[in-house]
Length: 187
Image: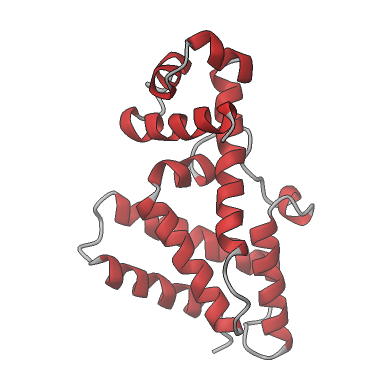
């Protein structure tokens, strides 16, 4: 594993431990077992580290989705939804770096999604468009339906992570699956 990847993984651990406000290159270097100057060989400053962290987190998310086997329409949608929930609950710092924090790597609607900068949302949109052709998905712009789905999930995940639901993980996941199905299903 390259030093840069070690630093990024340690930055995620540090982010999880102390939060964004206290994240420093010095602390990340200490966690990685290298000098602060060694960190600066890879990242110019904290903003550069956050940008790389955002890119790294989005790449990790994309890799998870790419591992999902090509199953039927509903099975794939459910598997991606579960993967998103698992990422948020099992790897909160990675999730936050990809989808919550301002890292300069975040994708902006509509230009980044129309421009193909989000392979996961692109694949989700393509699946929805195919589902529309087969009469499974409500009519409308498939990209918008995809964005609405991710927005719904992020909102529910945020509420769950802040203690707004008194649900087991299994019940929470089932609720999210139902919510996405209600949003995208034709009827």
